[in-house]
Length: 311
Image 1 (cartoon, rainbow, N blue to C red):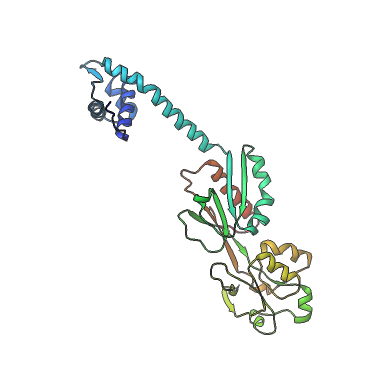
Image 2 (spheres, rainbow, N blue to C red):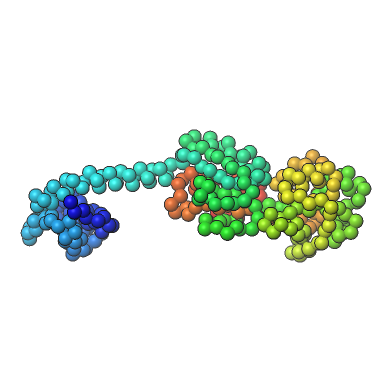
């Protein structure tokens, strides 16, 4: 049996056929579809040529289906209804905040920002589940099945949409015990002499992060040195708390210890340096509502504590 290869023009023609049958003539069908009457007539003629039958009896006063046309129409109407139902279901799914949302996040962001604030979001959307996976690298979101990723640092190469979510202040601090024996630096350059600094390795370069101080529109780079290098924010914080030296942790996880007096903030006149957080996601034009609502919520919780860039 010969089969007709499917293409988009066939489905388009069937749509015009259905419009003509419902409207009763070509003119009203054209008006309903926002087309001209000749365009509707040509579409019907192309469909007739495509399937090899005459669909309508045409007179100056009326348009009626032929027997073959009626059989064809009665066969395809349920199929059209199924397509329309599937499209409506897809729209409903896209607009409903439900299902599973998978988030790839830095440990620091997951621990100090996201998980403490996720409960109201889940309460607001009872049909939604959230899985937060801590990964220090972005990876392949599509292959790994993630909807969103949130990571510190400069934007990483990706085909996803990348937006700056917020800027977290960097603080220079040390334990009171360290300051008793070494004194507190009065200016950034003091760190180059007589001070032990705790270095943090940059995972992108393999080298320690440079130390910069920003204040009053001026940026000062300081060549610090130290005998301890770490590659984990928790280790950096632990070394600071243990009196090993002066460190530059993010305010996001040092602020509690500063408030308790276990760490002392230093060089406060040079504390305008920030470290960016970027959020990665799929194109929002076709993204499910759960992704859009999550992006909106994360932006809100970040703006309540730091100055984020608007999504």
